[in-house]
Image (cartoon, rainbow, N blue to C red; front, top):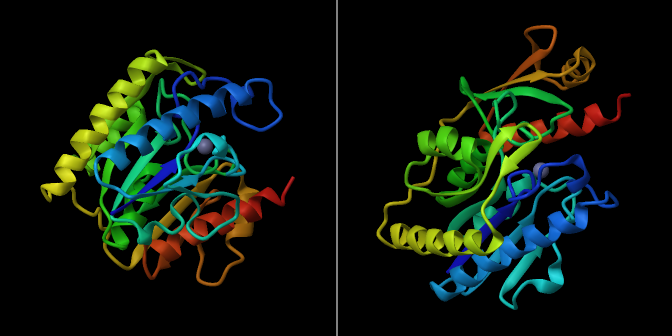
Length: 275
Ligand SMILES: [Zn+2]
């Protein structure tokens, strides 16, 4: 069996400062050490529970974050950006999917670095009328390929709101409780590792029992994005078939969630070209 582990940073324990989030910033080394410890612990437990291979998708920012020299032999790492379906590239190759270090969507109170896909670009993303977090977008893509999300570890607000509502079969491991956008409390790394090991064990049990389900969204997919700037909506509207429905908002009828997701990536990249 093969597991797929998508790794973000904002929902990792102790990560609370912009200085944690990009290479070259003073606290980035600490953040990547913590993220790597979390990933290694989960990979080890998956391996002990029967997953002979673990695909790890390094999925924050430039998508080159983890200390790959500290990952075990059976781990394969996906790195770099841009790549098709971004945080879940190659998810179709796996049997079960786990999300680590995930954070709440834009506009969530007391949740560290609440944002949706690109904090600079998107104010909200709706899929068939449902406001999506990155968790939901990525779980829908996994579900499109028939793959269930079996565990999500990250910000408590994301787990309590989106994960509990949309994927109640997924084990939820809180890695932090937000006190504000830029403050959180977390357990020790040692206790966090224990919670992750117990969580993986339970997730694999539910998966083996057939309790974990792929999260499928209907097709076609009605995608609606609201941007942080009218300029971003101007640019997004240049693509054929995209409808401008408000100063900041565009809509698109996509064939399926994968097409919708790729368009979100493209719009975010196009927005970055603007000053
Ligand atoms: Zn991130």
